[in-house]
Length: 357
Image 1 (cartoon, rainbow, N blue to C red):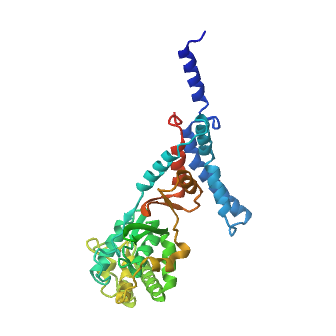
Image 2: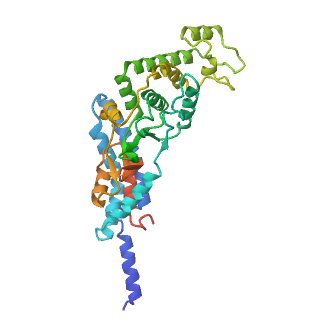
Image 3: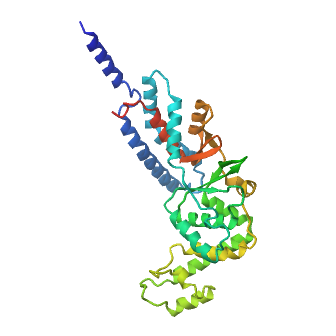
């Protein structure tokens, strides 16, 4: 006759063996397989599009299906975990875990108007300070533009930020906050820098002209740069003549700053700052109303509000189809995560504690 201790141990062993009833491997294997499946399926779809001549076909639903299939192993692990607990899920714990994860990716706040001192001209010290701010943001995925009371940012400065981010690939997301009803840091929306850049150019022909002028100058200077030039090599006559033709005569300290005297890695942005300086005699400020007027088609305003019901909150988190999901607490911006990261964090929070064993 079996003792109570042996019966209990046997039942615990049986329960542990059935923890992953819908997935025959470990939870760790599922987490490893998900991104691998995503890559394999994406490559397969790319090859199929080329082979079948479907390059111009919309890939939206196909890519959504690829993401869904790649998450299937993790979903099976979650289903196993839910089944092992009798079908109950601690939604509050998932909410806390997601909120904490988003808070760790809140982003860096850009100095107001890119330059710490609001009235400094881009033609003078402001241009140097603006480029220094952009240089500090190159490794950041998310940046925060705080409009404050509507007098903190100009359209020219936002264009400079977005032009640099678009060309360099970072930051990837711009989050807008503002003061509303006496409360600071209220979430307004987020957008991609490239979308903001395009909308700003469409809104003002002078901004577009300044951007194209600076871009053309930068391309010409880069193409004329000698391949084997050293810091000790004087500028060749052709380069000096070109600088004069471009209206950049005497600007070598800007295009090739000391002490290395090499081509400025932020040349495009430096030239753009110079080109837009003349537009700031009467600067166009950005408040919340102007922000919506400029960017409504590309501005993502939905956010997961911490005070919402747990079940509705989690449902909204998992069903959000945006590239990023913003998080708020009583309207105050607290963080942002990519859609894939939200799904991953939610699934990890749903796993039973011993699922990775």
